[in-house]
Length: 208
Image (tube, rainbow, N blue to C red):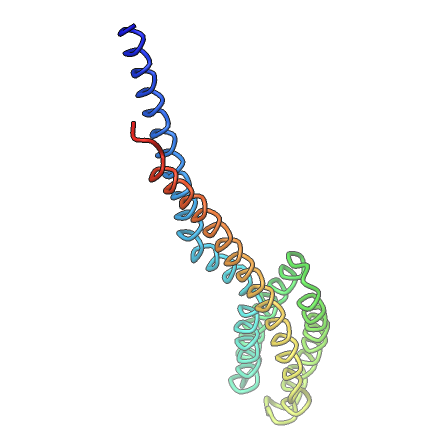
């Protein structure tokens, strides 16, 4: 009889240990869920922001392209410098073209695609205008006035197209980040609820 009582107590203690181990593991798991939900949030948001900064990069490079065209006008005083300055402009133009095509290939945001398609068409048209202005510059003995007048202000609409595309892309980035924050908050709230239940079980469970 005494042996049976001892065996019963032993099984009782064993189950107590197993329950405590299980509760400890459950507590550790849900604590990890909370940590994981918040630890990588800023990093993930930064990744999204970087991914959706492509149009901003085009804006910066397009400004450099406009500056290269000004160099063609203001720093070309013979055929040699004209050729060198035009090549620098052409290289920057091709860089903007490549970035624009990459955005169009990688994004499915309608507002971005619409504005970037409009920009791409206007950008190509401007390139032809600049080419004619460059030829006119050479014909007029490198006097920049007439060449400048033929393309004056043609870059301004393109700046507006890029701003519209950037606004659409930043809004999408904001929406994604808000969804990520909401998801993380939901996971934390669920985990806290479960941790509270575990804590109550520990408080009210029998003493083993």
